[in-house]
Length: 115
Length: 113
Image 1 (cartoon, rainbow over the protein chains, first blue to last red):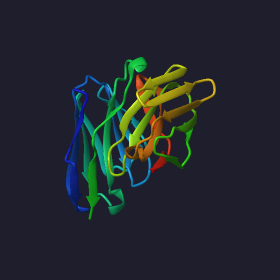
Image 2: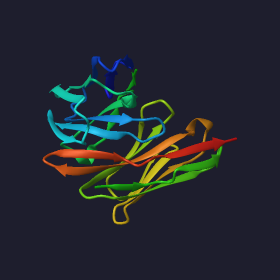
Image 3: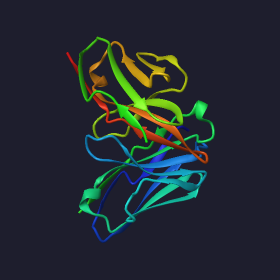
């Protein structure tokens, strides 16, 4: 199993809604990432979890709240988003403890539209 | 911080060979990835280099020189479906068991008949 699964694939939400994006992997990876990607731009790192602990938070607004319940799951909780937050949200994972054999795998992304 | 540079756009002919270059500056280097991304889709892993030299995988090859902070992706026997953005990404160790993957801006490759 070399898949990173993200749900939902598409999400439309109002600015007052609360929603969550989910990401799951069963490759035994201990590093998981959230990226935000706007059209025609490279993915931008938002958060990194290493061994279920938040290790990098790239100055992301507090309306985005990550959570790593266990080593296989990563959530991104959304609240009071703005229209400019509309983007493709990508989850990725990699083997944090063995960099000589590291591949970073991406999920298919959640296409988020804030109205 | 990290600095990653790659050309913005390239055009090549079907059946030809194209080389996409990437230069980088980083501390804690732990490898360089190449990804292919078609419009509206997630990046797809192509290659990973952590030691100097050439890695070949079918029509795609990737080269790394750590001393020069330089990598290239070589695509042979180009096909129309190879038209996509190609992202260079550097993995760096940021301490306490944490790694950070930073992407270049991507090279949009157009393959023409």
